[in-house]
Image (cartoon, rainbow, N blue to C red; front, top):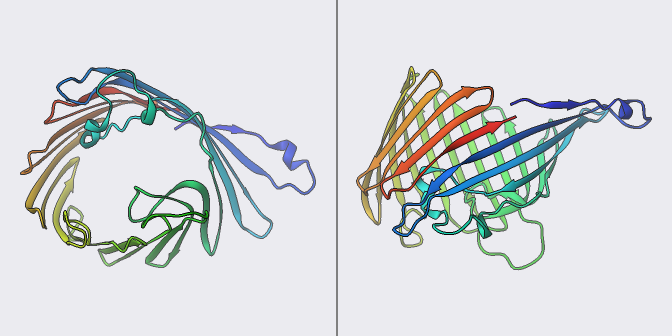
Length: 297
């Protein structure tokens, strides 16, 4: 991504102000999509965004900064598994329309970790269906900690007040655990058998169709010289389900295929043209598809 550095010599020359950096970056997406419904139309999507990122440092060594994004266009989720959520008719409007701006985020970091402030812009660390206002992240040796919280008054549902996640990595083993005020939790133990092969077990306390039921997923994954493969087996209240994923990447081109015994079949591909421009396409078993370009500046 190319950044435009804005010189801040005026700040340097002003007493009481420290030197600061401001960078501008941009992104754009354009293409066509269809959600695969019987009455679906093929629609065009496009969006453009510009982000300003600012940073500085106090005399005592604290780093502080902020970012602000201006954007316009259609906010569509182009993940192949989510294509069916896109609108089937008329123009992309309503929930899929990007806001002109967002509130941006502000952060302060130091030896204590990092505090980020972003009103309704911080994802719940366990369930990103909920947004929070403040996030703390810190790393202590092999342990990484994330805590998020909602600080605004008012009635909130479970999952909207706080969340926490810890990640511990040592000796090829990574343990991840997350929870929130909804009383649900998620834990994963992953072991890197060697540079190519890994195995993991995930326990989701709300994985079943009935609240409180547990779902266990065992996954084996392989990656070597551009080839990726994975096999997972889920055991929950809805029964056993297997998932297989295959992928290949070489010379800027990548293709991925995912199938499951539940009937899901997803295919996606991309080609990196260099210079910040990529061609992307995907389709699934419903007939949903998209093809377009992603650009970064």
